[in-house]
Image (cartoon, rainbow, N blue to C red; front, side, top):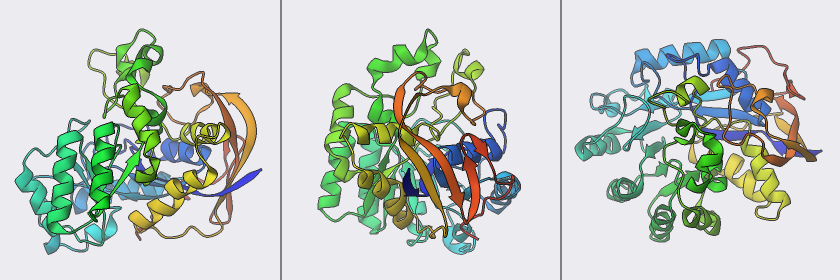
Length: 356
């Protein structure tokens, strides 16, 4: 058995409140444990969005009741909640501030750079700002980080031009970090027909799957990438196959086996995975250690990814049928046996809010 520390996923969508038919805090955190993830940071584009004390209380109450692994909840940046400096107790309760600056799923997109500036001015500097910002808007966000001399974390980069701009910014001392999703490392737009199986909506994700050249550039610049994050974004197959398919892939249960397969092929090292799924997320998001927490993996176990074996409620995966190597066997969370060979062993609600 390969013994790893509990993994951190800084980018997941639990879909609760408002869309528990896709996923809820129980099924989503069960999927996390099955993937070796013991701490998740949940995004705020729920229904209603999480953007003030009332909605934050709503989300945290549901998480406290249902979560099986540890967690924290992001707040969303909106046009009407920019006065964070007047209410410092609210940011302290959140994982960070999420700013949606490009096409996404939900109601939180911000188009005005004037509003971006207000959030950059008033959100506490010791707490993270994460942006969904692609291409030129990403470059604008990096400019904001430089102007206000504060850290910013770029979610799910996918393009060659993005990783090269971030590299240049880091070389100049700008406080920028970034993450990449396994689906942007292992899939390109050439794979969409295989994913879709005649249903184009199954290939919809934001940011979109990019070219093979973009994928190769991400691999060639792994030293620039701080975190591996799944952007676990479950929707049901009925929704993905419908007339207006929402973007997003589930990912919590496939990330580690995909990365361990890359380790077995010599494309990554175990230390590459641990730095991006434990050490760096903990530093960037100021997360506490999880005592007596570890994951045991059979690194030689070869098997086929099947959605039918998964805990996520959405019931599908873009990696259906992929041959991978490395299966999570046991998870211990804060001294308690949490997962073993497909079964969740902790009681619903065992998860702890790490911001309390």
